[in-house]
Length: 75
Ligand SMILES: [Zn+2]
Image (cartoon, rainbow, N blue to C red; front, side, top):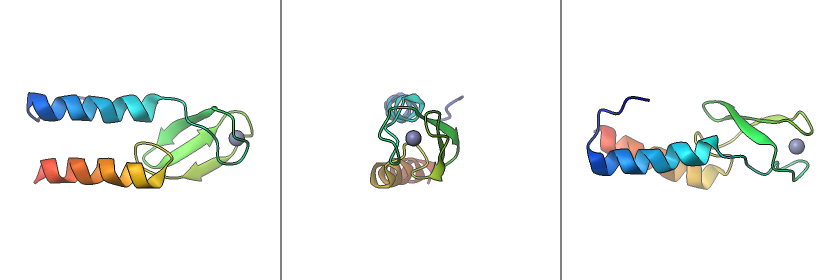
């Protein structure tokens, strides 16, 4: 992703990208087999569950925080 923002922001964005690329625990089977399918879409390789959550990670609260942080930056 090409960032239009300053260095400080780019660092924060990098952390968010790191989070959304990481494997996450599945709320259904508990295995760390969940990967990001699209914006706020997640898929578990283990039990084949697809579910929505935060835009950047399945835990909605943290995802919302990340989204708010980016929204602030975009203003
Ligand atoms: Zn699962």
